[in-house]
Image (cartoon, rainbow, N blue to C red; front, top):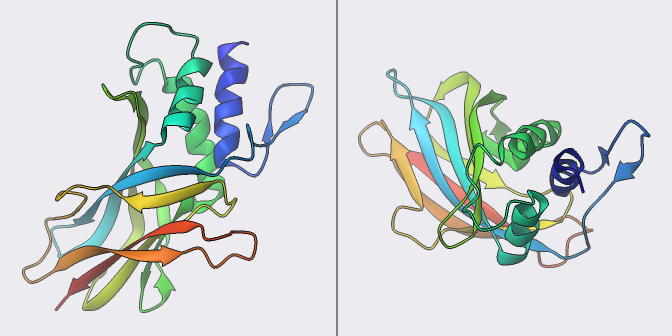
Length: 205
C-alpha cells in the first residue's frame, strides 16, 4: 500500500468520507471499532486578558496507533513528525471539515474558530500516536463567568477522555482568579451509544 493511500485511509477516521484516489472511490472508516483518545488542553489568553485560542493534544488508543504507524510502512524506528507529515496534513483538512471536533462556548454561544496555527502527529516512546493542534479564535473574547470547551466526534468513531495527569488542563496567560477543570459528559447523539465526550469548564471572575 502506498504512503499516499495509507495516509488517506488514516485520515478517513477523522472524516465522514474521503476520496481515496483519482478513481473517486470513497474510503469510510477502517473498521467499526469505537476508538478512544486522551486529551491534554491548553487554554490561551492574550495580552488583553481575552480568550485567544486553544492547544489540544490527543493521544490515541493502542489499536488506532498501531494502524497509523503500520500505514507508514516504516519498521523499527519511532515515527517522527516528519514521517507523519503527509498524514497530518490530510487529517488537518479532514478535521477542518468538522470544526476540528472542538467547540468553545461562552454563555451557550460558540466562538468562531480560525485556521490551524500549528499541527503535527508523532509516535511517543510508549508507541501511542499523538495528534497536536493549535487553534486561534477569529475574535478573542473577554471572559466573565464560565465558558465550556467540548471535544466530540460527530462521526461517532472516537471517545475523548481527559488525560490522567495533573497537567491535563492548563490556562496560559490567564487573568488572576481564572481556573479550568475537566468534566464528564456523554455524547447525546442518537447514533452514539454511551459515547464519551471531553468537556472542560473555564471560569473567570
